[in-house]
Image 1 (tube, rainbow, N blue to C red):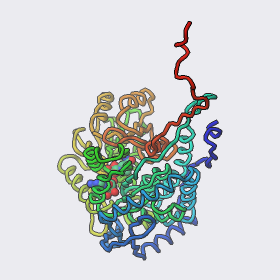
Image 2: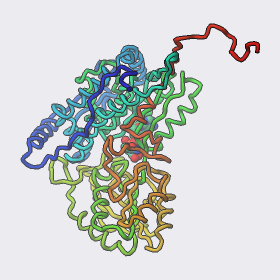
Image 3: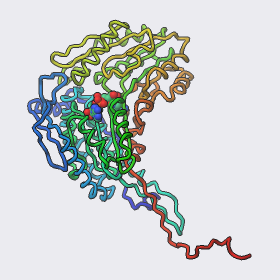
Image 4: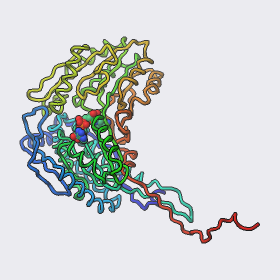
Length: 544
Ligand code: NAD
């Protein structure tokens, strides 16, 4: 029916990209190791890309390996305010052509990019993510390969669904909905922690016909640059996405003050998103329209354990959920609530696993953890650990060493006060704080979980007792945008668990969903009358 209305051709049905295991003996492992070695032996010169042209300013910053920070992987050229203005001009010029392309033509670019990423580009993007962001092979695989492939493929199918939503019509009146790209350019600002997020923040608005100025994070430059190159290789026309590395504040000042700013697609910390929102508010009189503000921000993600939970399941979920990728996932478990009757058992199981965890250079595949992203993060997390040493009990870990790489041990802290700052604030590192509650205080504990932090991104309940699951799900309805039952709060899969949180965690537009794509179009309703009236009078006005 919808096809008949829109005349659209069906896009391929998306399926989640299967993760490669990189187990010993697999060809993928051999290829990845070769790519890691070759990439580690070169220094990439990363330009600004505006209107398809590479620009080198000479003012550069190095991209290093967080696990071996003396090793420079590349240098990226930083944009000046002039370059940022040029990027907007290039986006606005490209918009004329790109927005007139059929949806199918735009979709084909992203489907081809996804195909390249699953095949010939896979080892490059995965290796760049491992080296530049210190992810293990598996963590890089589920992010930079599978999740990005999924974003691009699923968004195409979601977009098709959206475009085929049409109003009803009659024989004389034909109503149509046109999904126009926004008037102006979209500003995409991506975080360091997921390569896939950069590809999606820039890609989703572009798929809907917009053109984009993309500011990648300085600490994810290598992988993000390769994503840009991959999109070009897939046929993305010049100027549709402009790659603009540089000083975040300087770039933002130009873009947020620009009259053609049509939208912001942001993922990162709450404070930065708040500052951008405020600037947009101050600038409202300057813009052509109301910019769309989409931001996925911080979290203080919880695991709440009921006395009926299985202790081994809890311990595994906590260790994986809190320490994979060094706890630098927005969804990482960072506070946990355990009943007194279960604590010793769960603690001992966790401590045994934590003692077993290997941490080091991600090129050594035996490591479960790499380094945290940079010195700033290292110092901040170290500060929290020092605080815990004074004001709480460090059960396991607590060591950190930054001379060669920014390594922080997986750390388990027990807090006697549920309002202790490590239970409330986003740390963004491998630190899990636990509050042990009295078994009789399950309902009160749920209230504490709900009230403790301003965020509401992810959370998990572990219980065998269904009544406890129901109670937690209801009491914590607004405490998480992604809620897990007997599973760790990380690892959302595109198309399966649309991702995003509310409260201080963002606008909850669910990355990789139709809801997100709606934000990048401005609808025009068209009514066509096949039999316009020819008399201004209505029938009731006639003489009896
Ligand atoms: P960040 O806020 O420091 O940086 C994000 C981006 O904003 C980067 O590109 C950065 O250069 C830029 N930026 C920094 N200061 C800016 C400013 N004043 N004006 C404009 N742009 C500025 O975040 P990060 O350290 O890269 O990422 C970690 C944060 O991201 C955590 O808070 C995490 O919870 C959040 N995150 C959230 C999600 C989600 O889906 N909710 C996903 C991933 C990361």
